[in-house]
Image 1 (cartoon, rainbow, N blue to C red):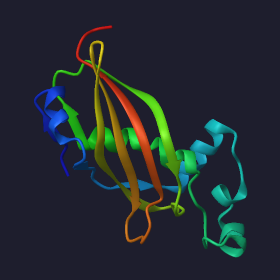
Image 2 (cartoon, rainbow, N blue to C red; image 1 turned 90 degrees about the horizontal axis):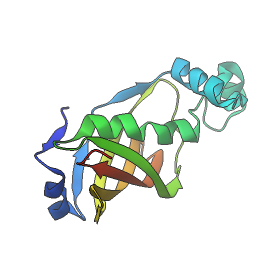
Image 3 (tube, rainbow, N blue to C red; image 1 turned 180 degrees about the vertical axis):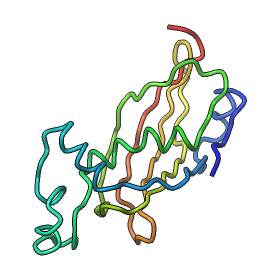
Image 4 (cartoon, helix red, strand yellow; image 1 turned 90 degrees about the vertical axis):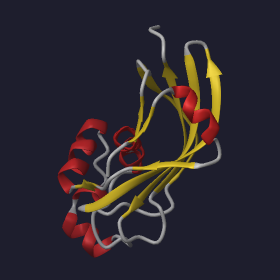
Length: 156
C-alpha cells in the first residue's frame, strides 16, 4: 500500500474527524522483539522465552512489548502519510495509550490513522491522531493511542 500524499500541511485541516490513511503490513519478528528487549533492558520471559511463553502465558507464545508496539506508530505512519512541504515532523507525545490485545511474535500489523485535531503553531501545525495498530486476523487492536505530531514547514 502506498502513502496517501498531501500537497501541503494545510490540506489536512479539512480532514479533522476523518480516517486519513492506513499503512501497509509490517511483520513483527521474534528477532525484532529481542532487539527491543536489549535496547530497553526489558527481558521479561513473555517477550523472549518461546517455550515458557507457549507453556505458561495466556497468549500461547511470545508477545511484543507494549512500548515496541507503540513505537511502531512512527514507521507505520511514515509509510501511510506523506505531507509535501513539511521540513521536519516530531513526535510530540501522546494523550492516551492503551494495549487492548497482545501483539504476537511473527504476526503482521497495520497502522490506521484518524485525524482528531489540527492546531496551527508557529512554523507549522500540531496534529493529534487516533492511531491504531491492528494485528492481522485479530478481533481487537493491539494498540490505540492518541498521538501528537508537530509538523514544521519552516526551518527552526
